[in-house]
Image (tube, rainbow, N blue to C red):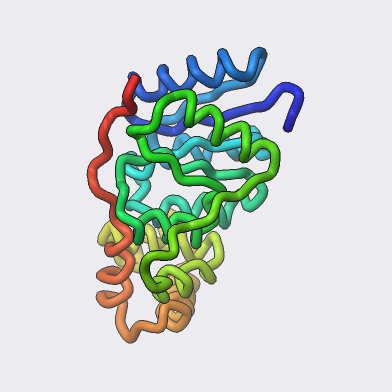
Length: 213
């Protein structure tokens, strides 16, 4: 465990962020704690501090598109432990989060003491096991093979952007985007752009609830 750990708390509910920050501050004196309320803010914060010791991440946050955001952050920052803190309790959602690289998954109804205990375990190098009550989701396994840039393209496809718009947003040529889309379809095992978007949208997460004080 780092002597003075650094945390990034990502949640669009100020009360949740404050509660988690307070609990972590008490449990880890002198810890460096940053906050974010959108996926873009998380990406910017991790770009500034790529050696952040743990990211506490809500799934229902602007820009996340459910578990798509988890996969994108994992591909961009593979060494930063991701601790999902979510109100979604479905075993399939939890399992997919682990498949996309989460180190732990915490129910938002958990006590702050339990959350802190899980964070401490992750800092010590533990990775929690996903539930095994249902078959492995093959689509999420295939999606986990996408590169960071391919995840960016897929995320924009989910938002409804066409190739020209994606090219403009990513600062690349339209031909490059077309090539990425082709590879994405092949890796996902789908035949069309529409099918890829429909399958990817299955990664959406139910609306989260506030953490219990």
